[in-house]
Amino acid sequence: MARKPENSSCELPSSPGKSPDNRNKHYKFKGDFTWKGVKVQRYKDEGADWSEIARQAIIGASGESAKFHLRYFEIASGGFSSFETHKHEHVVIAVRGRGSAKVGRRTIELNYLDVLYINPDTPHRLSNPNDDPFGVFCIVNAKRDRPKPVKKPV
Amino acid sequence: MARKPENSSCELPSSPGKSPDNRNKHYKFKGDFTWKGVKVQRYKDEGADWSEIARQAIIGASGESAKFHLRYFEIASGGFSSFETHKHEHVVIAVRGRGSAKVGRRTIELNYLDVLYINPDTPHRLSNPNDDPFGVFCIVNAKRDRPKPVKKPV
Image (cartoon, rainbow over all chains, first blue to last red; front, side, top):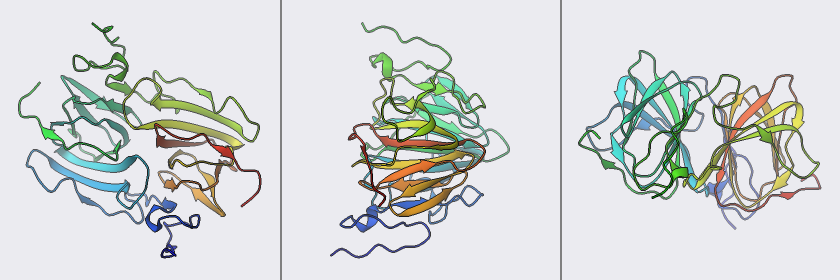
């Protein structure tokens, strides 16, 4: 019999026979754009083409079987993500402050609850030219290719 | 050559050779929990085990190639979704008001930006026992099985 799932505040009982890591989970929002049971991490462990971003892997890093991952990225004032391209898609939902997205040749201002779909192979970068933090949910396929940096402006 | 993508306010230019439906898109939040370019629809066309819910299919209903779909469901005061089970997962993010989720035998109160992961085969229902509307993003696999109604309480 599999190890019985722990039942902390963010882990709910699951059906018998389930993988313990694939249990039901409730990540409570703590009011400061962190979630109970979710670590705040570096955006990436590599590269120098980004600045002032933190990542929280909410769904997908703990054995969930969904075909997608949900992350929260927060960009401090003046920060930006890598300018990169890849074959997988992004869905971005702005939830804190406002910021901008470079998507191919276009720059789009993102405000509260705006949803942005970035299709495969379009170079993109998020940035925060404002004084307040800019935070977004970003949903991606669970199986995805590695991003490639884009050197030249498009 | 494929039809050139239209370039309305929610459709951004895409790379050449892309499917016109799989273009980059910016769905602007209109402030009232609707998004520019997204229709408000019935929750389901069938069944009688639900009440007072509207659905907006934001990502996934218009040719996007992501392996997941993003929907927004809004439950009016006193409303509830079907009590159902299926093999696919749900990720629910509360964004308007507050409500509750029955997940297996547990009932969980969902407040602003709480994230709920419902694993495969757990019976579940969202409901709104409060006076104000309760709205959630719900993310699911693009390829998913059909929900089965759950008749008996578990």
